[in-house]
Length: 284
Ligand code: CAA
Image (cartoon, rainbow, N blue to C red; front, side, top):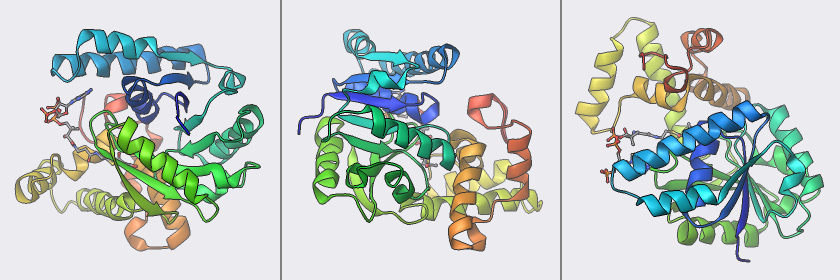
């Protein structure tokens, strides 16, 4: 199966990055948003990232224009009827995601089409069960910023067909030029099973007055050669995304390491979501 016609649901931080990756790989991409304002914001996000890629010498102007030419936006999900691959990157709300999968199941006509979720931690099987084709549903989890981070987790549920897993793994490696790894449909998959307890620990360390955010970050950058410290990373990922991932993992495992710190919840309640909202633990 040669995947050419793709779609992304949502153009927030992750959706916009994924749409950019697909368009740069030469694919036709439709981005589905909830309204025109959200579409305009998503387009701006992609244009800004492509401009940065040009500034950094990663892309020439002609490739940028070609990528933008392959992208279109819609608010009408029925426009996705001819898609061969749809990647859902809506906000981390299980009910919203389930209803998106059920709508996609109704509108996407190709029985060979693949329906994927970029969820950080929610069970893929629940989205698969919202469709009549659970064998064609899987997780395709990108990392932020998607145009830069090379890794993609391929998450097979207990019903994902091996052929679907293999097609998507080949596509991610050969067409997108990313590094796929295979994860099971377990809370947090591979990366977030390790990362979310670490980020929660860092926020708890700050919350308890154990150390300043600057020193926590400096500790992991200078001591362990991480590209950024955990408090800055929570700001980059989004406090809301970190909170929802922790909540979802804690609900399933009861592991105290994933229990969301109260400070994280309060900051999300306050709309302090990190880089994307202009303020999180740091100001942007
Ligand atoms: N398009 C293409 N390339 C870009 C780019 C863009 N929009 N923006 C930056 N780059 C490239 C740069 O050219 C540069 O490449 P070289 O190293 O070859 O020069 C590289 O990316 C780094 O860019 P910058 O110099 O602008 O920025 P930086 O050095 O300050 O790095 C960062 C920024 C990439 C975010 C880096 O700090 C980093 O990797 N941080 C860790 C991010 C991380 O851990 N992400 C995973 C989060 S977890 C997640 O997403 C999953 C989840 O479910 C929660």
